[in-house]
Amino acid sequence: MNRKPIIAGVGMTSFGDHSNKNLKDLGLIAINQALSDSGLDFSSIEAVWAGSAGAPLITGQVCINGQVVLQDINYKQVPIINVENACATASTAFQQAATMVELGAYDVVLAFGVEKLYHPERQRVGQVFMGCTDTTDPDALYHFLGREADAAQRHSVFMDIYAAIAKQYMESSGATKRHFAQIAAKNSYHGSLNEYAQFHDVLSVEDILNARTIVEPLTLPMCSPLGDGAAAAVLVSPRMAKKLGLTAPVFVRSSVLASGASLENLPDLTSNTAHKAYQLAGIDPKELDCVELHDATAPAEMIYYEALGLCGPGEGPALVEDGATSLGGRIPVSISGGLIRKGHPIGATGLAQIFELTQQLRGLAGARQVEGAKVALAENGGGWLGNDAAAIAITVLSS
Image (cartoon, rainbow, N blue to C red; front, side, top):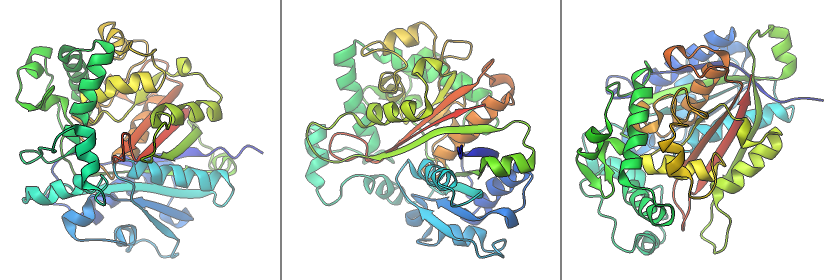
């Protein structure tokens, strides 16, 4: 019996500085949008997966974030499972919710992610990202970087990590700083079309190359910003979808979660997880119509092109030069503007990707609509362990 989950509703807030809103405020905006979109009330929800990653350090709210957000509407006392998995937090909440529907445990579930990262104390924000690395072995990061992480002038140690990865990739592929600027320029155009994005200005390649250097080869527009925000999705079983009479269902073809380890000779986490996701979905990457991925920096997007099988090894620069990943290209990527333009409130990012792709598959993405989109992929990574991400979640959707 087919029990592949179906997305019945999605919602999200704009991403950016929401200093005037707390976790509860932000979470309920996205949740109420998703419920309205699904045509369901919260009384129909049987279980909830609530994601939040950095907010505990920023707000002081720990352990019961989901319960706090839903306290005024959870009359049925449904189970709420709080999820934390670095930048893959919301993707993990979605994957776990989808899995429980597919296993037959529930017919109607909610997954949401909510995040607060803005704080006047820069040090506290930095602690969030440093905590996404192995704090039991401080030398591990030093060994990977070949130096101390110099994050004193930045919010995130991950810019050091991504810069090191970018340099390695440049040596192996021939990619240049201009290629990375081309990606950032592309995403700035995509983001200008997205009402939910943190930034709407369109930048040229020269604007990006001439911007302030964060850590070589990364300039400021190549890096994802801090942000607050929330996103949510209502998932239902095929039986419930039929009962609801959904006219534009979006099917979860596969949703795969995997974790990294600091062991030698492990396969690349993203490539390995993508292979599993494609197998479970019964598709080839050539069948994808659009992709939202974890472009925490512009070089990361290019590296993921190869890891996800959008092109062959070393072919990322050519894919950018051909315009294949731009709107109107063969495989548009980061149509929302991606993390570097839409924003990256880490506990909400993964479900914002699901929001974007659901709208694309419904044909409701407006000026940034990918023509004829039928199959889409979301990839979201989180944390750093050894020489790879600590968590990865990859989801394939179809209309």
